[in-house]
Amino acid sequence: MKIPKILSLSFLSILMFACSGTQKKLLPYSLKLSNKDKRYKHGDWAGFKVISNVDKAPETLKFFLDGNALETKGDSVKLIANSLGNKTLELRISGENNTYKLSEKIKIFAEKGPDLYTYTILNTFPHDINAYTQGLEFYKDTLYESTGLRGFSSLRKVDFKTGKILKKLDLPEAIFGEGITILNDRIYMLSWQSGKGFVFDPATFKELSQFSYGQSKEGWGLCNDGEKLFKSDGSQKIWFLDPQNLSEVSHIELATNKSFFKNTNELEYVNGLIYANVYLKESVMVINATSGAIEGVVNFAGLKKLVTSHPELDVLNGIAYHPKRGTFFVTGKKWDKMFEVRIEKK
Image (cartoon, rainbow, N blue to C red; front, side, top):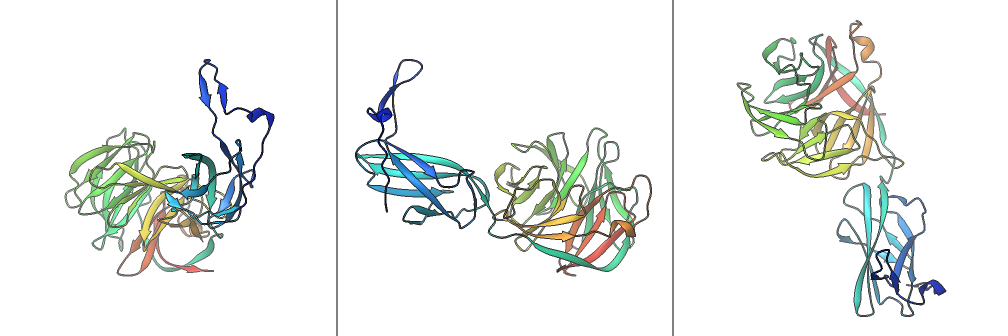
């Protein structure tokens, strides 16, 4: 590995005076990346230079990303991250009987662009035209739905074949209901801007507890993988929640090969992928639940034209997977129909 060494009069000494008058020690080395915008795709080789401010060159260089050591070749490092998004690339340098740590803020995007998907309608079912749908999920072959708007928010159990509401709990008028998911015989439900969520018994709809949000300031969508909850908040992040205490354990950031994306609304988890409604769009993102890579986009254009038009008709929202049928159910806010569809790659 070649280690460039740049000496200048400004580094005749490795000591400088801070504003307070106290002396601070300059690091003997600095790091410079070849890409000025510091944007990379996962797996890219990033060129770098280590600039030495002293006579002695570094003895060893080791790069780390997400706590993992990275492969280097010559003056390049291979960027392999646990997930995509805003990252800190760390360089550990050994030299002069010391170890130094340098870092650079970088952005990691997906290796390739998303695949395009379309749909085939298999069945059409009635849906409550007054339901401002926020969450939709099958649990033990029964459909559960949450609705929004202050004064109209509710939790429901629905016969999906007839659209009949089997059980309904109206939320307090101050609460704007959002997404739901069901895990271990518990319904977890979000509110929008109240900073809190609710836990209900799925059989009785009795409220069991409430929980507060952490760094995610709003509540949008929820789903689960059988172990943890995934929560969207309108940002480019999807948060991982511990179902025991509802704390935000970590997060992923959503990215294609070119940019970050936000406004993920209602969520559904299926086999390692999160299907996310895109707010105000007739589309669903297909997201890798581990990396945050947007692997596909489902174009649901045309569905809204099949429902009854009325002044309060709103956007596509609500997606639920039926495990036994192997199909998806989708609807929208104040739509009078729900569609069973098969998602297909174009």
